[in-house]
Length: 247
Ligand code: DX5
Ligand code: ZN
Image (tube, rainbow, N blue to C red; front, side):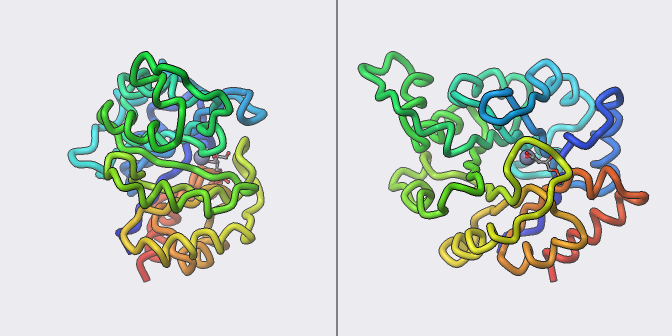
């Protein structure tokens, strides 16, 4: 499997101290920052938008290579994810991870006028558009979505339409601090069996009590919000999460 990547979710940071909290987590050994974007429609909660992302970008060094330290992993829990690709690129997002459920539009585009319009029509087109805009692309599935919908996308004939990462949600998206759903791990195992080199991210309820199950299933990108930000010693938790994935 690819290397372990630990991505603290800044949803559990102190938002009055966000820049400091973000740079601190990188100092404490985090690889990426997981930035949860919620629009109050796709999920019943709202968080931050581009202006805030762009300001915290100024507090954390840019990654020197794709997937490198300091990567901003933006988890887009929003409707119409094609509409925000350029803005998030400009704000400093490195990996734009949209939800499959939000990208499957019931409206078929007629005579697409531009790339953004085309990107509305299918997850594959959206991935291609994200790549053209210079970011890595991730695709996320909620607990109610079967993993099978991803095969055709991950195995797309055109490499530009293939995601760099798949995110399997292990809670219903919307809030930090929820209980881990082990029921989602067979999806991770099925993905890992098919794709030995794919970055597979898990998000929701991950901590020292649940990491072993997720790692055994094959996850290598670990999001942890409350478990890292709520810890007495976040550096120790980050190190232990990493060890659990690597062993
Ligand atoms: C939930 C978010 C998660 C959340 C994880 O909708 O996508 O990233 O912050 O928080 P914990 O690790 O506390 O479950
Ligand atoms: Zn998330």
